[in-house]
Structures are given as C-alpha cells and as structure tokens.
Image (cartoon, rainbow, N blue to C red; front, side, top):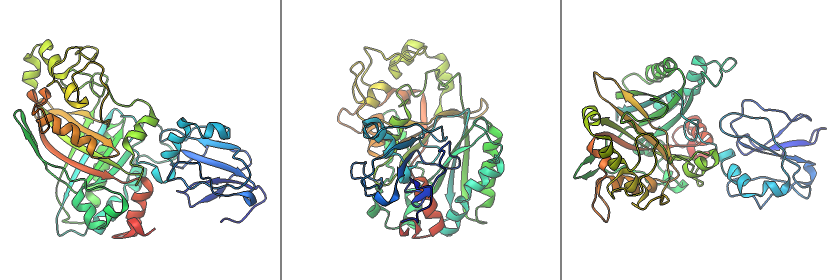
Length: 419
C-alpha cells in the first residue's frame, strides 16, 4: 500500500504498480496506455471492489467511488465523470475489461492508417531467442527515433504490435499454456479451389502510419539491430489504402468489421491473458481475371454488390459472405467475429493482392472461417473468392498485451511469468 500524502487523492491501476497520487485538478494525462482509471478519496477507507469485472483488482473501502476517468483508443482524451451506477453499466464494464493488464498493443484494435507494414521474420534455429527477443523489444526506441514523442501527431505517428510464432514462444516461455495461452498452431488446408499453405515464422511486426517512409525506416531499424546471422530470411510487405477502403478486386473490404472500439476490443482481446491471436495470409490476385470477369459474376462469388457492398438476398452458399458467416440466409448474424486490419499491396510488374490480417480472442474464430474456405467442414464446399486469388503464405501469431510484452522482454526466458 502506498504512503498517504496531503492531497489524499489516488489513482488506481494494475499496470502502473499500483497506486499513483494525482494533482487536485485532474486533467488530461499523457504518456499512459491505460483506458480506465478509478480516482478514490480517503485512502484509509479503501477495500477491494468485488463488483468489477475479472482481471481488474480495484480497491476502496467504505467510501464510494466519486470519479472515473475513461479513455478511448490509443490516445488519452479529457476525462469524464461517472456515478457509481454508471460505472457498473454494461458499457463501462466493457471499457474496464480492456484496461490495465488487458491493454492491447497499438496495432490490435486501432483503426487502419494510410499505410501498413507487415514484417515476417524467420530466425536461424541456432540463434539465441533471448537476444532476438531483446532486440525486437527495443521497438519503442526505434519508433521514438523515427517519430520523436515531443513532436509527433496523429498524422505521422506509428502504431505497432509484435507477434510471436508458436515455436518461438515455446522457446522463450515453455510453460505458456499453463498461463492461458492456447496451442495456436496453424494448420494447412486444401480444397478443390486451392490450398491455404502453412509457411511459419518466428516474429511478426504489424505497424501503421500515414507515412510510408517511416514504416520503411522502422523495418531497417528492426532488421539491422537483430543479432548478426540470426535471420534466415524476412519479408516486408507494405500495404496501402486503395479507393477509400476497397480491395484490388474493387469490393469494399471489411464491411462486417466491428466499428465500435469497445466491440473491437471485446472481439480481439483474450480475457485470460490480455493478449490477442492473429491470422496473417498473403493473397495474390489474378488481376487479369478480375478485369475480364463480369461484375454480376464477381458479386455472386463475394455475396455483395460491387458498388456499395450491399449483401445479396439470394447469394450462393459458396459465396464468400456465406462461407464466412456460416449461412447463406440474408442478414444472418456471423457465428464468429474477427477484427480485420487487411490492406492491398503489390505492384503491376510483380504480385499484387491483399495482405489479410485479423485479430481475435481465440483461434477458433479463424479455424471456423478457414475450414469453410477450403470445404473442410460438413458441406465440403469451397469459397468462391479463391477463384480469382491465391493464398501463398499463412500463419497464426500471438500478440501479448503491452504489460505481457514488457515483462517478457525485461525478464528473458522466464520473465514472461515471473513478475
């Protein structure tokens, strides 16, 4: 417990270990990643609050909560005042569930930006996992050098996240499953329209920025600072916004994506660990087929209109929409939701297509959709989207929460769970 001070006003957070006194005039805070704050008067009367959601260890005693600071997204906004009744509302508890130890990395639930980096790193099996982890753990320093904190704005900031392949996580944290992380092995799938290959990888970086050049600099910093000889190969793909959010096929991408920050967090963040799972696939489009195929035919393949992305009332069971939601019925709810962060990539002289990336609280969300793409399910039907695009890479990744990531980097082999 902290010592009292004359102000007798305290702010509780599990990420910041655990109490911090604040000024009498509570204003906008800076430099904190948290979304949720409880400001409590009279430290003498504190006791544990049993009514808050699991994972948040908030404390008070007989004195009621008088103020709650609520912050959205990755930016700290001016605080709002809520009563105890409002604090217990379903909406505020959703915010609370994403707070403190559940703080996701910057790439997970934030909106897309004009450009994105998708960096897959394959390490030499003989390379030291601790040294590689230590190097990648300096990513904040690299970002700060490219975008100095004292001068950055929303227009030039870099939002980023670091994910780990299953084999790499096993090396740096052998007992990861005992701490709530699933065995997230990616399974190769095949169907009559193609296959979804398993290509693996050890470390994956997903970053977003409105300036392409800053993402290129970030890639340079990450690769150049890894231990000599540790990298077998890497692939850096740069995505960009096409026609205000469309895929290169012309269809609007991510129509069913959760729009509300609370819903995105609920879909993407695992409440046991605070981390997120991601699926990443590189799809290469057949641009000639896309250009020569009639719009009506393509709309049947997708299950939506090309111009305004309206769902077709009579869509084939093999359409992309029907495969993903698990039903060809009109306006049927999705059985599983994901937070898509995909963007087009490529050149006319080389490959071009979609870098598909999505986050979820559990890999079962991905498994359901990928199984239905290749017909690895009860009806044995494949997804018509595979008629004009081919999947060439694929893997699952685990993105630890910010506190998890920091503890893992600072603690080495066992630091992920020691603190």
